[in-house]
Amino acid sequence: MEQLEIDEQYMRKALQEAEAACQKGEIPIGAVVVCKGRIISRAHNLTETLHDVTAHAEMQAITAAADLLGGKYLTDCTLYVTVEPCTMCAGAIGWAQVPRIVYGAPDEKRGYRHYAPHAMHPRADIVGGILEDECRELMQKFFRDKR
Amino acid sequence: MEQLEIDEQYMRKALQEAEAACQKGEIPIGAVVVCKGRIISRAHNLTETLHDVTAHAEMQAITAAADLLGGKYLTDCTLYVTVEPCTMCAGAIGWAQVPRIVYGAPDEKRGYRHYAPHAMHPRADIVGGILEDECRELMQKFFRDKR
Image (cartoon, rainbow over all chains, first blue to last red; front, side, top):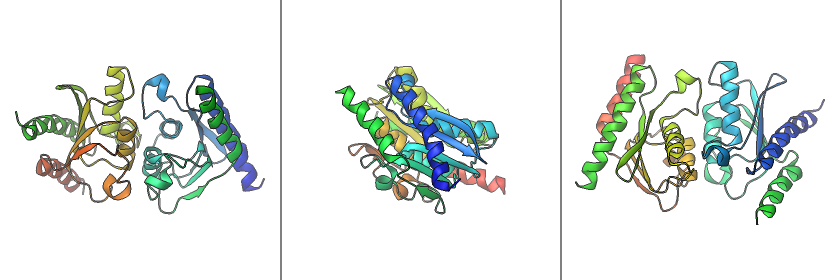
């Protein structure tokens, strides 16, 4: 399979997580961590349910992946997330030394590229725009329905 | 009591947490969250123990404080932390809308001021340098002993 096809396949898994968040009334963002061709963690935003601003999809996916691997660095992993990470998550991704990050929709308002463009590892491979329309549409629908 | 005296008093509590981290072989950083004159959470770095890069003192203190208050925003709180927050923690502090942040020693290498100077709330009151020498000395001693 081509890399783009692989990335889209895993982003669909992250989108399933985002949909699960949506059904709980949470901002629909999902993430999965893939290690050597296997999904080792999946998570979705739970900030409202847990009353916890740190419960972003990426943070939980990173914590669960490290727990599974038994070490805090995710140096053989790719993180997929439906929306561009925020400053906090980019910082966590940097600490975890994730070498490849794939996100769906850009976040012009709270995305890391504006606030902390150098938060991730300087040699990290960062790919945006995978299934961008689906990822964005889920967010837009959520906020439209909220009004 | 003068504000400086109050800040030093709470920073001593954060330093006690940092010392507890040190005794566990963790990088000695501690934090407390104060709400209306009362400490509502205290935490120290546990990244090694938990194998979790997100287990910084501030992150845990924020999560615990929000859990206690039953809401995710800490708009009536002051966060005390012995070392300048990193990008991740600054992002979390921003999301939690903490209006006042007091830190001890600056962190020239990984501190938020270099990587994400606008991560916290634009109107947040940020005070650095409280008990700076003690906070720095604890860090320096830890890394000296590690060698």
